[in-house]
Image 1 (cartoon, rainbow, N blue to C red):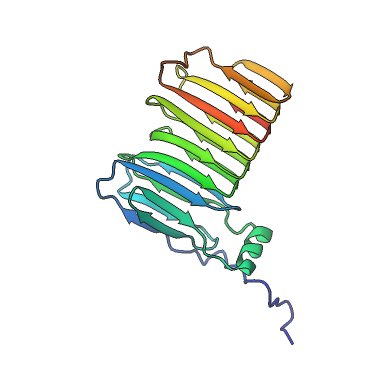
Image 2 (tube, helix red, strand yellow):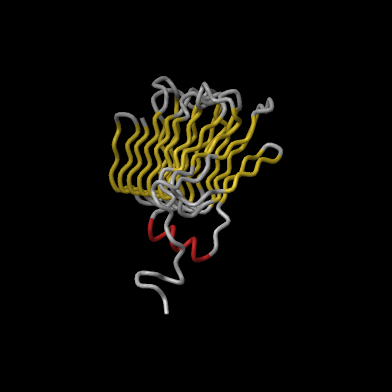
Length: 225
């Protein structure tokens, strides 16, 4: 017989004082890297720190410890969890506030696989090659740097809330496929657009350093400023 309050199918939650150790990989002069977050549950904060010494540092907080694998030009973050661990994380939200710090001398591309609950990215000091979120997202906020060339931002599988901030003089195009309930681009606002829509900022996009944002699968609340 199980002890009162025990559950043989549930992994016990880690006490708040029991934090997983931070993970890191050394910076060895890399110039271009792709960060891949392989997740279906994660709430993550990604930022580029001008004072960072490591290529990448991950603080998992009180959630399950992730696995970091760096090979060639890719840094992959994943969670080798059993079905019971996965269900526990889903029910309890145990992956809250995963923090990822990236080295400033590297040009980064960022990809999230399997969807994301919440993603915030302070990339204002990054050299950014692009951002991809696959599998849909609930809440995404990105602070973008001045781009070099045309930089793609791709959200597939739909989006509930998307906020993107860029430097004031940088052009941007926004394409939504599958309809959008509310879309704001700078000082223009649009409500309930069905099907596909494409807008461009007053700042030039073609032939300029600019962002190309695409949301497929529909969207509820999109704001680009």
